[in-house]
Length: 137
Image (cartoon, rainbow, N blue to C red; front, side):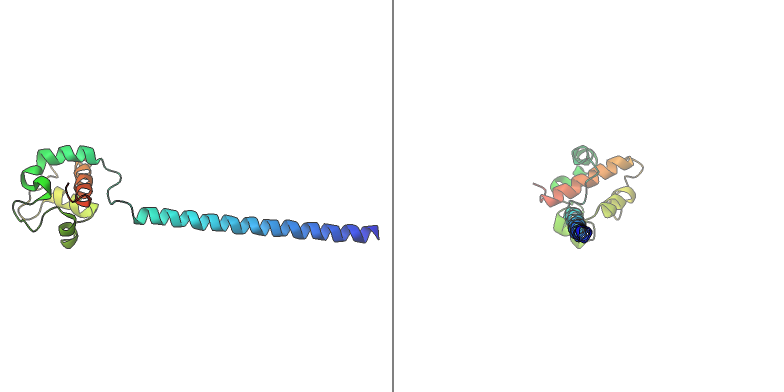
């Protein structure tokens, strides 16, 4: 009888251990899902220009762009200014689009790819996007 009681107690202990392991596994899954959700949310709602230096970009902008784009305006084509709504309307509210425009130029805008380094173009892009988000204020 002592052996059967021991077996029953071992079964109970094993069942409790299995239950604890299952709960731990479920908790790890939940934490993983929560962290993944936070990461997705963070990247989905982050500003488009994170890696570049907007402060350095402000200096590059002042020296190279402000003559036509002071305060986010466009002295050549007023409708195609650097305000967020205009950038979105003309498909320019992205790092890739602005980098391409600054590098290659387009219409009346000259190409700056031979005058500026790649990191300067990235910096000015970060500056333009950050200013557009602030409505150039």
